[in-house]
Length: 351
Image: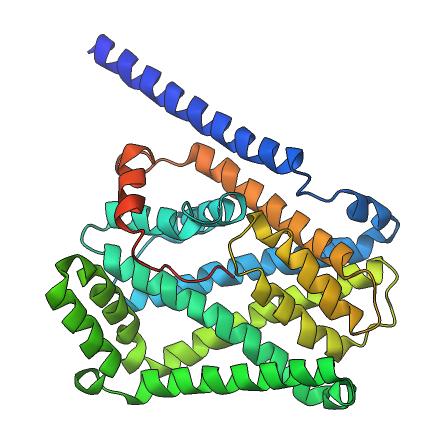
C-alpha cells in the first residue's frame, strides 16, 4: 500500500514538474523571439488608469467567452460544473496563445471534454467550431455597425472604400450563413449530402459528418444562437474598447471612436490566422496599416498592449493548467495521438 502511494506521489510530482517546465519553456521561447513588446507598455505607464480599464475590459470579455461556450455546450447535452468550465476555458486560452497551429486550445478542450464525457468528442468539436464561427461573425457585425455610424469617414479614399466594400460583403456573408443554418432543413442540406457521400467513399472522413451535424444542432435553437451572437458582439465591443483605452494611453486622442470600432475588429480578424502566438506579427502589421488610415502611427503599439494582456491571461491559464487534475490520462501521448487523428478535421479559426 505504501509502495503504491509512493509511486502515485512520484508520478504526480513528475507530471507537475513536466507541466511547469513546459509552461516556462513556452514563455521563454516567446521572450527569446522578442514576441512580447514591453517598450510600448512602459511608454504608456504614465497613463496607467487607461491601461487598467483596458485590461479589465479584456478580462471581462474572457469570462463572457466562457459563458458563451457554456450555452453552446448545453445544446449538445454536455454539462460541466462552472468551475470546471472556467478551468478548461482558461487552459484553452493558454494553448491558443502559446502554441498556435497543430497544438491548439481547441484540441485540448475537446480532448478533456471527450475524456470527462465519453462519446461526445464530435459534439465538443461542433460546439467549439460553432463558437469560432460566432466569434468571426461578431467581429463582422461590430465592424459593420460602426461603419454605418461612421460611413462619411470611409468616403473618398480608394483604400477606405475598399475596406467599406470588404466589411459590407462580409456582413452579407454572415447574413447568408445564418439564413442557411436556420432555414435549410437537414434532409435538404446539400453540404450534408456532399459530406455523407465523401464518408461513403472514405470512411475516415466520417468525423467531418459528425462535426457538421454538431453544428447543425443549432438549426433548431435560433433564439439561443441569437443570444450567443449578442454575447459575442459584446465581447468584441469590449475588445475594441480596450484598444481605444490603449490608444488614449499612448496619447492618440485624434482617432475617431467610430472609426476605431470599424478597424479594430478587422485587425483582430487577421489575428485569426495561427501564424505566431497571440497573432504577433500579423496583428502588428494589420493594426499598423488600419490605424494609419485613421491618421495614427501607433497601431502596432496599440496591438502590443492588447497582445501583452492576452499573454498575461494566457499565463493565468498556464497556472491553472499546472494545477489541473483531469478525470482521465494526462495530456501526453494520448492527446498527441488524438491530435494526429484530428489533423484532417478543421477546428475553426481562433478569435
